Image (tube, rainbow, N blue to C red; front, side, top):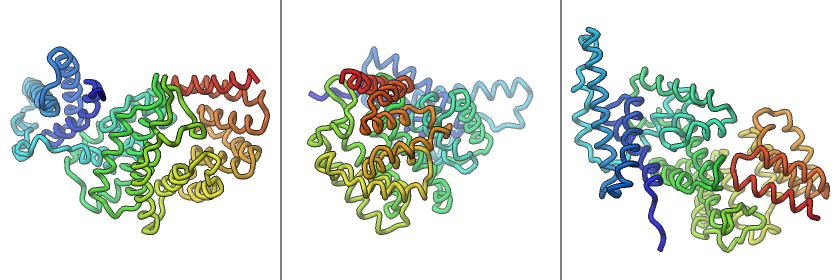
Length: 414
């Protein structure tokens, strides 16, 4: 029997939906977030004792609404005591009767996503706030995704919330013109949420399946609104083609299994077929964007019957095109590995050396892990051993640490 979702999993899934419902009904993003967090805490305590209610989302919205009502009345009372009542809207007018007539079953997550990506916010604040409000990531996880410290990210998220409050932004789906200006940020948010779910940056498990599933769900929702947008289709294809490998990425004890060593019979054929169909349809429509190119690369990996049959030459060529559109250190790292598989490990190592002075990735375990792998392929076992150890020390994910230490020890035993 397949176990049902835990209370923690359910609350994580429902949190952005509840926040969206409260913001839609009452406005006041910051207060709605506070009320949502209190409702989640109440649920965690009460549901553990009484069980999950029949309508958990409605339960959370009701509790959050009561808490928000209390909070707004308290604020109004404070203003009244300060003699400023005339300058503020009465508390009862904070409520939107039209919104209260909307069905409680409505999922406002997509609207919340676009609100967090409003142009009043800086691009980095858009992504950070959405990862926090919609993706449910902790501030430390978001900081790692942006390669900054946690204190810096905390300040950015706080400023983003204040900008939404000060700007009086309306909770609604943007118009077509408004949407065009926010779509790039929305896609980046969904991409980062998926990446954190597929390869957790920290913690005891390699994957956080609930985050990857939520990113796919939101991207499907977005594509239903924008069915002809090639980059939306490309992102959904990329997620499906990547997530198709998930069943083979870990062993019986949660240990990481590299793609070259995975049992490809475990890869999900349905997800691969859907992803290939999406990217095959999207590419000719153009213009070609970064997500379409990454999806095409993933499709080449997924369609190879064995690791040895991977078309590395075409993958390297696609990464070269991707660099012209999105020249960032992670793409350069992946391109270096692809080049190594075509021209030999030394060619890849030369490209990796160029990243040593890039502070965005110089301290990242992925650079050291890639160098270790290419050194091993070149026959330099001593330097490969040292690089694997360095990568393991820099990794925050326990399964990644164990995998890298195991690779190092295997070389030592030879």
